[in-house]
Length: 398
Image (cartoon, rainbow, N blue to C red; front, side, top):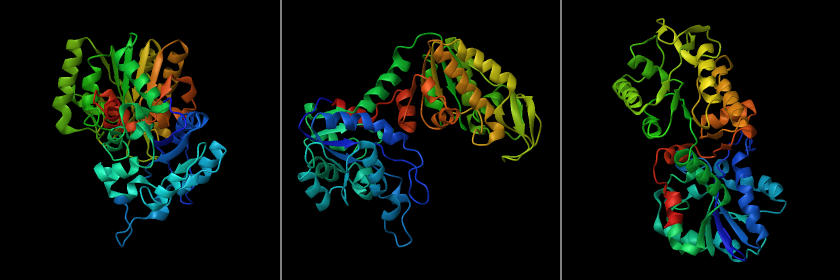
């Protein structure tokens, strides 16, 4: 990313949450992109920022038109100006006349924010003409949007083909994401423990399959644990499980045994009589949950078991919560994992929090600064860890 005196098109991930008054409620993704933007500014470049925000094409107004008032990136202009300590300009379109004119007159040290890329149908289609028009706005291209690197969209992948190899680069955030994910997958110190949670086995099949080739310990929590417990003959009440994935779970357990990977399932659970924050709840053995009750978090014995494994690990990957952590009564298991990961990191382990709810959980506990790396990419990180080639990465490497 050694560009100087250039007009730089930077694909960032500014898909930030907004409240009803369109105020940013979490600017983590903006903060993550600032080092790249500031470095490029220091090198006397003019910067054109492209990003999507939300899913405007899936949330059209009653008349079928785009809700520009809701999804415009103009909501971010003042916040970004404050963070960069300069007046960020705004283009009312992405590749139209306003974007072309403002890009043409953009001077070194100035920043232009383009309108939502997803206002153009060509973005999600990876359309060549849309990408070409976008490329004409700048001399060089930097992709710093790891969170969208798994999408073969116009501004994340297709646009890169209109720049020569020496005219395109990863941003600092992308470099960090790739380096840290690769460190976990390819150069992990042992014991290597993966903590996998979330609701469904079906969402994590490929991840588990890939991890079984690499880890020493695999901790399974969340709703997906009950499919594995059912596969072992457990009585799980009305806990969430995927009946059509029970055989798959049996097969994964068998694979783990053959590879010498120790799978850890929760010995006990916090069970509730309904899926509700005010439900009655109690502790029960995970293999003996009575009818009418469901597991919504790991129990105290499971917390201790899992924490002991984590705290004795040298490499840790965490993807997915241990329970319904959004509800206070069922958050303690996930929090316990966060504290165990932070403790292990303090003892010298390398820890990667791999996207999605795990990031929300580590932020909720305030321990995000006490782990090695927190990924900004949910689906992108998951696919990277599954061993897939991400279009946004491949386009820069070509």
